Amino acid sequence: MTSTRTDLTAPGRILLISCYELGHQPLGVAWPAAFLRRAGFDPAVLDLSTERLDQQRVREAAFVGICVPMHTALVMGTHAAQRVREVHPDATVCFYGLYAGLNATYLLDTTADFVISGEYEQPLVSLVQALQAGTSVDLPGVSRYGHVAHPHLARTEFPAPHRESLGSLETYAGVERSDGAVVTGYVEASRGCKHHCLHCPIPPAYGGRFFAVSRDVVLQDITEQVERQGARHITFGDPDFLNGPTHARRVVRELHERYPHVTFDFTTKVEHILRHRELLPEMAANGCLFIISAVESLSGRVLENLNKGHTRTDIEEALRLTRDAGIALRPTFMPFTPWSTLDDYVELLRFILHEGLIHHVDPVQFAIRLLVPPGSALLGTPQFEPYRGELDQAAFSYTWRHPDPRMDALHERVSAIVEEAAENEEPDERTFARILREALAVADTPHLADAWLAAAPVSPPAPRLTEPWFC
Image 1 (cartoon, helix red, strand yellow):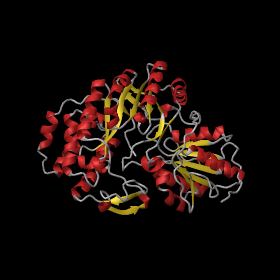
Image 2: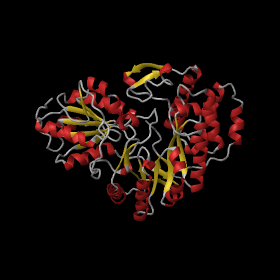
Image 3: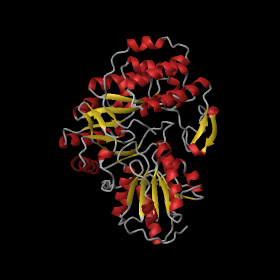
Image 4: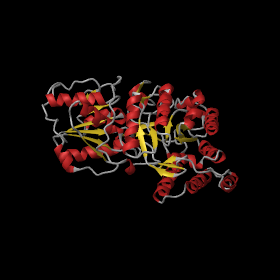
């Protein structure tokens, strides 16, 4: 399949749109912009989390790339693509990112001309070059109508991200430290993941592979954000920072040597906390404030069905290890799955109280429900198939109902509590108490709430990101 020659070299003829990246300055457009600039193009960038869709910029663009690394971004991205089609029907629209690949067929049937997943930057450049030259767009890693390509997985020579056209870090989420909220930068030292958690969108794209970004490039990006944009904290946004523990160790050592006042956080699996426990004191000494870990559940059945690779005992040990090192563990949860019981939910709340973790868990975590998009590794598994309903294309997920109707009702009520609390900026401890009372009422044990709350240890403030929403 050949393309029609299109002039894409003039400034603004390529428009890269970020929809949502958890409140961070978006690498999903900063890195592709750098790749395209290295290839001789001059793309414009637009971040829908901080600015509106600019119709004039859309009219000027012949190629619009929309980054959709997560579910929320995909929902926003499809609305943006529809608007692009209205404003500029002849523009070429390309979706790229994790959720683009999972939903490739739908996107190509509706608003997308092309879809790219995996390590998307180089295929994106190759596609733009083909459109510029009017040559074949039958390219590795590039999906088009009637042909869904495999995710592109290859080691890439990364340039430093191009951040100059994005808003200042002050317009994005920060980190609340003991000295107040501070300007926060965002980098990635690796891409992909070597694990196979069944509910995660990464394994379908990466198949257990991950790719390290050159330490020099990571540190150049950190330097840009610290020295030019005033960052005093860095979030390592890798799916799992300790997939490459030696690489991670070297990066944070040099970060601390250059900027001893700059703190950081990262995400890793429970099993990596246990396996690399010897790294924790060094990470703390180099400025690590907190670690985010996808705990998901305390239930052995749920953890096994998700192929998480850890147990409740491991969770308790990880909590002990991080506390001993002086690092806050910020666990994330997915308490609503087809296999989670009401007793599981109540026990999770009791555990949070008993361990003094109210300020370590953002309230939204108590409302997270299993999302099963097209392409999910859970599809076809014996544990999920009995619950699988129809594909809700508008929601980009397969429907499912809990066998205990009380759990679906509780999910709706907890979600409402969390949304209301966020709108009113309610203190976490008050929101938690409301959720606890709701769950105990559903379990017909409302009398336990006052006693549990009174007996709980004091839950001191913990460092956190100011953007608590996930997915």
